[in-house]
Image (cartoon, rainbow, N blue to C red; front, side, top):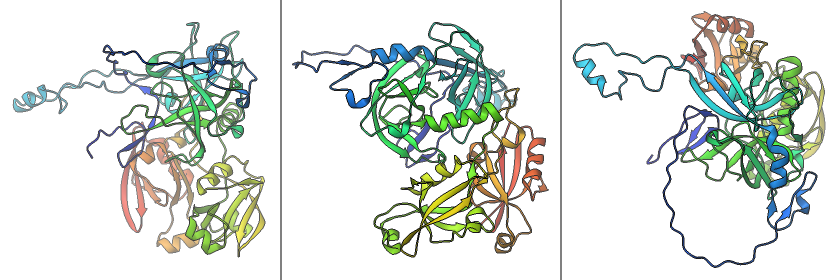
Length: 492
């Protein structure tokens, strides 16, 4: 396509890459060159206004001064170094791009592989509790065998991975230390586009680097990010910034820097942060229960465009239109049906369809949710009992390892009798959501899992049992649109 494509836990669309920002591998060495300068005319600058903790964005005038904010909060931002063992070194003698490859092949010598080397990477994090709990990104520590945390005073600690939630890209690690500095947590719902924000992290390993920008937009939906309404900013973030905090002008953390949008692999003015309220909710569950529970109501929804809004008599495009209510699911039991438009949940407006999953997933299973539904050109209230989203657990256990059921990154449920008849299948598991290894392998929502490693599977337990027996890969037998195919998934 005329441009280099970057792939690092990302989905590529039209040559544009979504990048997770873990500083995996060795960072490229920057090149430097003298920069010619010329005299320029200058004009009096606005007097910088010192910003202290507690100052709101509304009180900032002119160009803000971030020095107090950084001095107060910088010590709570940490560098995270990880080691992932068992990965082959980048150079392998005898690889196709090795000059010795043809020589060895011509003379019948078998290709020689280089020794296995540990893969090293870096990221960022921040201390949220005096007990040593640190928030970071899941993609920074999820596959690490060793995690080392370095503070700004150069103290180093070996960290334990408390839990990892790949769906929100949030992880919790813990260190044992005394007199640890902590950050203050803010309210991202109060953010407004145009508001100043500050990012602190370790881009390319440069500890406690500070960048500033503004909030570009709120509640952004990204590929494979349906559980997170991202904060978009233009604060510069790069590999190594992953897991670092995003501060408002009051010195409160409002987000965790997670991804960038780029055509080059480097920062291009668009970055995304996980709202801190979502991250704290995940953290609390991981610390307390070792796993994350999410709510579901069993609906397949789509975006409401202008034509659909006109057809259903809405004043403007908004909400999430129900394309299908799962037979026997919570929504269907409550009376929701195809064509209903969900406009709100518990008083919270739903502007776009992508917001619905994020809102519902944060509700506790077993609780009631009041939906505002548009039907027959009128609004009505429908109460739905929230069920639990059954998925492979992605929290770490006490040894810092992911349980077997969470290796695939699949959210599945058994087919209903009606679905079995419609698909012409005796049974199977419908894929409702996909992430991690399964997403990378090509599994799609709507696929029906009918077997694994040559064995038929008809329940979540049977799939988990086959997964637990697999050390490096799993051959998943999938029915897609009436065609059965095998999809190998790397899980080791």
